[in-house]
Image (tube, rainbow, N blue to C red):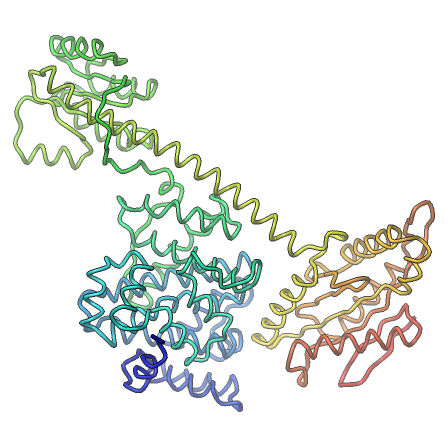
Length: 637
């Protein structure tokens, strides 16, 4: 059954989460074709809390430069789209901190969504998959359909959540369809469309949980956003797991990171500061967050202590007891069972010996001089290597309260004096099962880290190859268009200048005809090397096809770009290029254009630069030409 009737019914009923107050006014204003940034800023001034959050986000997005101090500056830096999306998100967080669905944890939902949004923002900064503010909103709203179903069907959805256990997204989706004829991903896509989100963000939100299907072309921006969203969700899952359950998330997390070209070290560099941002935003939005240790500690944490094996193997055991008769009796039983045994008479000596021999099991008396068994256990647990040692405490009689406290301090098991051989074997069987499980886990973890690292490197190489021109080593046309989109977005958002050069090698066909394709390739490679060496450090040089190059000049006015273009033209003309055994002179023609009041689209900017390039060619080549005010101006030859 189609979900459309259900969506229409929910829209008409008014049961879906929706913004109110200033956020609603901002959304309505953004739908108007005549709305300006200043109009939006004036509306936002009526809500100081929302204004403060947007200013904070604008400063976070800027990463550097002069800080934003007013809502007007924040709106100009962020742009209308992100302002609308962020206002919507912050409004919904305030309104839906609780609700009628008892099985739905509203605080956990927003906490998870906030961490996913921040993770998407950080990933966007590192992999350039899209504007960080847009990707923040994408992560924040990735699970908005769950909130919507909990709001519209509180009783029925509560029963679904209880029945599915909530963690398996695919099982939850199937249960939603069976009971409500719609799932949270379909509903999220419909809501984001109603709110004016672009399809480039809606489609990944609708399909990211279905890892078994391919809705996007390999290497496409949609697939990159989708895989980034899966990684962001996995990071949010990790942030909401208890310490004992985090090991369940780590394999998926490493795998997802590898798919987007992030290795273990880079994942730690991304995640650790992210948790701090999560806490800061949680405090700002009154959303609960959780403490998380550094990522390296999570990855290196000991395995869970559930076991399945029954046989006893040889163990490295440190036996600690100040009473000689008990020590010798237990040692004799351990040696007869084939274990490797080290002896110590008190806790201090045992701790020093443990540093050297790294035992798998410590059997220690409780009451000893200098350092007793419980103090020894605490000292072992305070070290990384000591956390995985299996500790068995020898004791005569003790109260239940003392024994419970000992377990909390890290003791794994107890042996009652006098020690019997059958009881000792039983306790060691559990210790052996734990040691074997830990060893298996260590091997699996090492293999996982190796696979994830290899996958990350392979993905990075493949992605780099897909975006790099093989001949010149420059970004190719696909990469160039992505870079131009990013520069265009930043230019419009911050009202900053942007110029573009189209560079074409003059009479390239004659070079090919006279020196062969190998000679033509040598000429192109030499021109590319010259352009890259002479371009300004903030400019991007790309090969967009044949003998044509693109130079993107962010934050550069047209006349400033014209000076840079002249420098490039002279550098190419003055260079002698070796083609086989001969040296030839090569020249280039350059067309320039800049974003202006009448340049409303990227295609317009590219067409203007193309027109200027054609004019430079028509005027005799080896010259620069620019479009200004709709008119073409020729530069010197």
